[in-house]
View 1 (cartoon, one colour):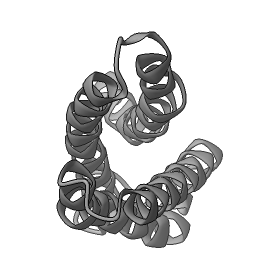
View 2: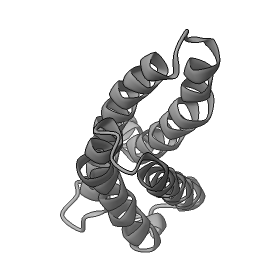
View 3: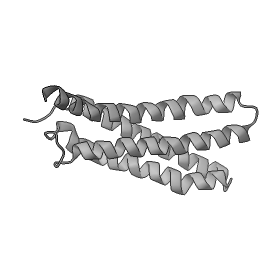
View 4: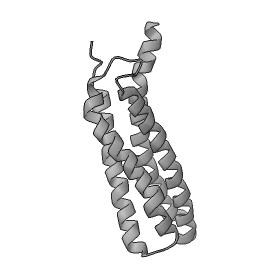
Length: 145
């Protein structure tokens, strides 16, 4: 039973790390490489849109898992990180949803592309910062007795 609880206690750290690392890899490595190596910007943009959509679902999965573990009704004792991270979790999830369902359709439709691309980039960077703040708190917190 002790080993099972230890595994459960590590899941929030894993979810936070996956969220932040996936945002980092997709947004700051893979997408720039698409624009560098694919033959046309249109091809790169189409593939980037698909990757960002997939990233939204990764963000939502990780964020919801973190919300479940930060709940007082969780099977784990409340952790120090839960109260300080909840705002960043919710904010990051809202940013992911806004990016996917408000900004991305405008970029795909090529509607005022410069404006919406800038807004999308800002929302992505803010989500990345939120995920980093969550990761920092989860890795620094200890379960309360």
